[in-house]
Length: 541
Image: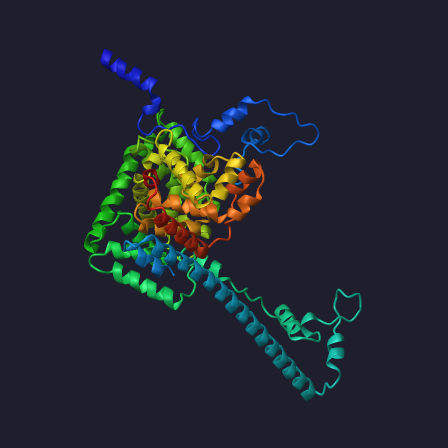
C-alpha cells in the first residue's frame, strides 16, 4: 500500500510529466530567454528611461516598444537544370552559375508573359472594334431597308430615358464612337462582362492547388513523367524526388506525398494492404485514447488544441465543424503518442497542407469553398488517417523543435543569424543597430515552417520541394528562411526603428505570391546551401 501511495504522490507532484500532458508553450510573444542573446536587453533594462517631454518618441528599442505596445507579435494573424545538379557533386562555381541561370530564366519568363498579355489585350480590343463596326453596318442596312434614312444619332436620341426628366438621352451602347478605344469601352458596357486576363503568376499559383486550368505542353509532359513513374510495379523514389523538386502536379500530388514521406512503400502491390492496416491502426488509437481527452491529466492538452484550431487558416475551411473535429482528433492522438513533447502551439498548422492535399483526391473545386461534410464518411476517414500518419512522419524529423524549451528552434535561429551575417552583412548590422533579435521574428518561421508568412498555395508548393530534398524540413528550411529574409533587403534597410522593423518582419507582403516567387526562393536557397557547404556543423542540425 505504501508503494501505491508513493506512486500517487509522485504523479501528483509531477503532473507535467504525464504522457501527453501539455508543455509550457513558447511563442513569438514569449520566446525562450537566453542570457547571451538578450545581453543587450539586460543592459538596456538597467538604464533609467530618458525623459521625453512633449510628443512621445518613436520606439527604437525593445523595452520602449514593449512599454507602448500591448501585443507586438499578433499584428495580424527551369528547374530541370537545378534537378540535374541535385544528382551530382559539382563544385561551387558551377552550382552558383546554374542557380543564377534559373533565377534569370524565371525573370525572362515573367517579362515574356507580360508582353504576351499586352499583345492579347491589344488583339482583343481590335476584335471588339471590328465587331462594333460590323454591328453598326448591319443596323444601318436594316434601317435603309425599313425606309428609315434619318440621321442615326437623332433616331437613337429620340428614345427617352425614364431618369432623364424628359430630356432625350442616348444609350451608352448606341452613342457615336470616336476612336477604337472608345469602341472597345462602349462594347464592354453593352456586352456581357468578360473575365480579365489572369497574370502568369496568378495562374501558376492556382494551378495544382485549387483549380484545373488548361495545362501547357511542358506541364502535360511533366504529368506524363510522373504517371509513368507512379504506375510502375516499383516506383524509383530517387527519380521521383528529382522530378518533384520543381513542383508536383495536383493530379498526382496525394500519392507522391505519401511515397516521399515514407507512408507508402515503393512496391505498388503492397500499398493497398498497408493503407488499410495504417488506417485501421489510427482509428484503433481513437477508440483507445480519445475518450480520455477530458481526464484530469489530458484536459489541458485538449483545451489548448480546441482553442488553437479556430486561429488557423484558411478560416473558411478550419471553422467547418467536421474539419474542427478531425483536426482535434489528429492533434490529440499525436500528443498522447509523443509524451516527450506533448502538444505545442505550431504543430496544429502542420496538419493543414496534408489535409488539403488529400481532400483533392476526392474533389476538383477549391477546397476553401468546399463543404467537407458532403464527402462520404469513408473518404473522410481515409483523409483523416492519411493526414495523421504523414504529419507524424514530418514531425519525427523535427521533434526537437517541440520538446521542452524547444532547443531545435533555438539552434536553428542562431544558425540563421550566423548565416545571414555571412550572406548579407548590411542586413545583419541593420538588425543589430536597432536591437532586433532574430529570435523575436524567426522563432515563428521555424515553429510554423513559414506557414504564417506564405499563402497556403505557396506552402503546398514549398512542401513539394521539402519532401523531395534530403532533410528538407529540418535542414533545407534554414536556407529557405535565409533567402526569404534577404529577399526583403530593401524594405528592411528602409526601416529606421525597432517598431517598424518588427511590424515589417511579422507582416511581410506575400499575399499575392504564387509558384513563380516560390521557385525563385527555392533556387536561391539551393544556391546558398551549396555556397555554404563548408559551414559549421550546427547549420546541418
